[in-house]
Length: 481
Ligand code: ARG
Image 1 (tube, helix red, strand yellow):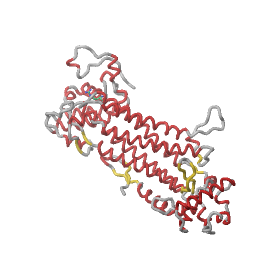
Image 2 (cartoon, protein in one colour):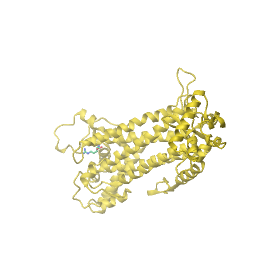
Image 3 (tube, helix red, strand yellow):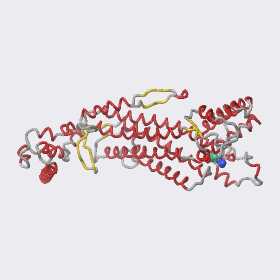
Image 4 (tube, helix red, strand yellow):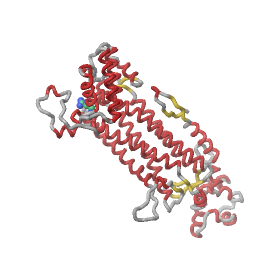
């Protein structure tokens, strides 16, 4: 980072007799990470300056100079030429000071009717709003990858599990769509969080508001906010929107981690269900045969990091009296790292899912083993009038018999089966097949091919992408159904 360690005069130094201790200077500086907010900080300052001029609080000339100066500073930061001063603590004072150096007195008028407390809250809200949209488009990409994986192997039947024990046959696209649903809920949660993030705190000043005749609605509109915060004390101390985001990000990581875990299991020799792309695996420095699922493992591992940030920030705010306290500065690293982590994880998972290759032949063999259709045999007997509990018990005996003989259900002939119940007829063999089993599960939400085809079509319809430009920006949006 391009920075100078030279001592700087603080904008607030008027009432101080001593210079800031070097330790505190280093301890309290946030510029190393909050410079990430420079675009938002400058946008907020420009809107504020224009508003001050419209309201006759500063002159149009001063506002023009401020806006021009800020545009130049933004360009300087973007090009990497801006010299950061850790002695000026944070992004707000770095930019304001640079403005004063550049345009003189007009720059000193910018902070009229404003505090860093409402300024930082505004910056972070603007930033998070944008990042939520970016994350949402990554999640959409992941949903699309799941759908393409579902379509690519639409008829594949695989063993479904409960307790990690083979349970009942399910369709591959049904399994993919289970994850689709999770990410759909995640996106809904983000939409809710975005709504509460998208309100403008600027004008709350330090905590009590300001006596200048400001126009908060104008600033909010300029910055694309949907409205203004209602209470100045709350506005400068509220970090709920960040916590809410971290919780939503935590749930996304939980979903990604479950998917990772499943892929890791499926890629093992023990399961042997899928082949992961070489490009997302690594080898071992000692064992030449190894192909390790590192991408999935890292996603699983990174989940803990995001949960940690959520708990960290909850703990930070739990004992804080109103209104702003410097503790709140601790929100940023948690937020930034969580955003980086969750976006990178969703992105890599999309590639992993899109390039997954199920071993169809092997999987199809697996569905004939492990008594996956035992429930179907019980249901068959129920169809012949046997109470379910009794049918369950009869089939339990059939399974025990098979286990003691080293046989599968499908190894039994009609006579073997009829020894357990004379109600069993020739039509049982279709019932005991994996295909017959999935076909039977026609209830809404079930794994029957027609239900899954409908669900898949619905899901594809949902993620049709439309481009709307809010404030000139293109963004992906889910079609609302
Ligand atoms: N860097 C500070 C933060 O992130 C900005 C607000 C500082 N306000 C203050 N009164 N010291 O929270």
